[in-house]
Length: 380
Ligand SMILES: [Zn+2]
Image: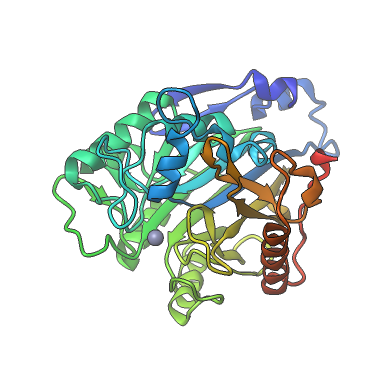
């Protein structure tokens, strides 16, 4: 980790929450020669993770560490370098932090220690507009927001009131002199009514149009939209996703990242106003059938120069949810699926697990054919 990344400080700045650090645009221009032929470039890496789930077996695993309380840190130990090395890491929190009783499917409430581990793993922002936001009613909804606030984890997509939304939406974050506006919407809330004054951002094209205009008025360098959409377990996007993507691009979105199908869906396009990753799949879950037992980290590299901000590259890291049996119980841990399985030796990965991880890797490569894959070099 670079020294600059260690000295990042977070400040609350109205109207949005901004990251600030030593790479602010002001510092760069002050140092430089202002002659027109001199140029500067600054870069930003954003990493997206998919659905952060909390099934009963995960809760049991987090409890069975031999220590008092719940511990989710082992879940993210092998992906942490990717999340921490990114300038911004964003995930979809698909459970509530509603307090006990802790429960998995169908109405999730996970221990607060999950948020501790996510923060420690490197997550900066959680998107919250999804079909499980109201699993534990208004009290659970509000408590979830409070637990993230308490830990300094930025979030968007759900709000305690219209005032909160008007003050903090779209979320505008800044790092390395690049300002990003982040928007987030869900297709629904599993039929659960949203109790006023709570707000869960729904996919409503009139509202989205207005929000994109508000985002543009903040003059960000890049507008990212996180969509909770699509058909569960379907390996390609549906026509509604395609139509919504083109609507978002027509109205100012620069890139779109999707979640909800619990499987990886294709990446289409490559440039600003064109790039969409339809579904990043599961992040962590106990879904074990083929295609659902892993996901991808989607890595977006932006570059800002005198002519504006562009997508310099994008890539994906396929990872698999490994559940080895240990003396303390079943461990849940995410492992890069393209790494040598011999590296995961505590306990050794079984032949059966190696086969499943390889299957996930092959399936993901087939679905994302032609896209750059992140190599797990740090493990060597
Ligand atoms: Zn969902």
